[in-house]
Image (cartoon, rainbow over all chains, first blue to last red; front, top):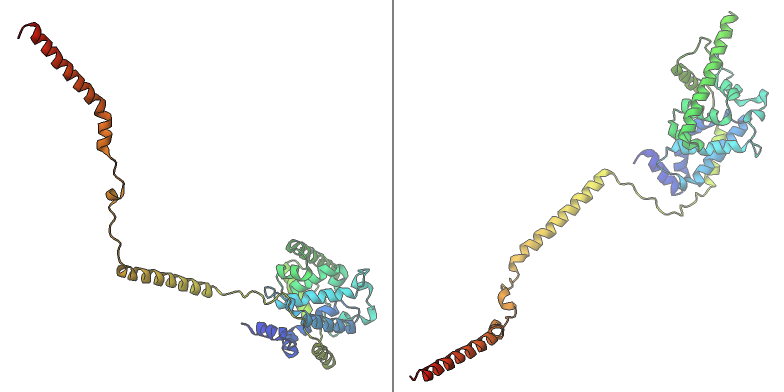
Length: 180
Length: 138
C-alpha cells in the first residue's frame, strides 16, 4: 500500500492529521490554480479552505480508482464555480483589474505570462482543461473526470485551446517583428 | 513572453508549464492554521455503503486456485485409497436374475393340434389297412 493510500485510510478513519499530511503537497498547486479563477487572493484562499474541508468530510466517497489529485481538483473546480453564482457569469466579469490576484503573483516575473492571455481568450472550462493538462500534466481521462466531461469533449477543447493560444502567440510575434 | 514565432506545440506546452510555475503563491501560516482548525472541526461522514470490495492482486487468485486443485486431488486420493477396504459385492448372475419362461408348455401348446391330427391320420390309416385285409379275405 502506498503512503498516499495509507494516509487516505487513516483520514477515512477520522484522522485530521493524516488528511492534513495527505493534502500538504496539493495546497500550493490548488491555490495557484484557484487564484487564476478567483476575483481576489482572499477568495482563492477561502475556496481552498472550503475544498479541503469538503474533501475531508466526504472522503468516504473517494474512489481509489481515481487519482487523488483528480478528485481534489474536481471539488476545487466546483467550489470555484460557486463564486460565479447562479448566473454563471465568467470569472473575468467579477475580477477587479487593480487587485487581480494573478497579476499580483506574476508581478515580479520579467516576462509576460501566457496564462493571463489564456484566461482572457478561453472560457472557464477550457481554461481549466488547459491548466490541468499543461500545469498539472494530467491525462485526458483524468481531466475529463475532473471536469465531469467526456474524453472526446476534453480532447477537442484542448485542441481548440491550444490553437487559440498558438494563434495569439504568433500574432504577438508578428507584431513584435513589425515594430522592430 | 518570448516573441519568436511559435510553431511546435511542444514549445507551447512547455511555456504553459513554465508560466504556471512562475505564478508565485504560498500558503501563509495564517491560512495553514485556518485550514488545520477547520479540518479538526470536521467529522468525516461514514461510508453507508459499507466497506468497498477489496481488489485482490493476481497472486491471490493463483494461490486460491492452486489450493483448490490441491484439495480436490487430496479428496480423490483419499477416496481411491479407501476403496479396496470396502467389501466388494458378489457378482450378480444376470441370467439367473431374469425369470425363466416355460418354453416347453409353449411348445406343447403350439404342437398339440398337429399331434392330434397325426394320431387321427394314423388311426385312419390302420382302419383302412384292416378293411383292405377283410375284403381280400386275409
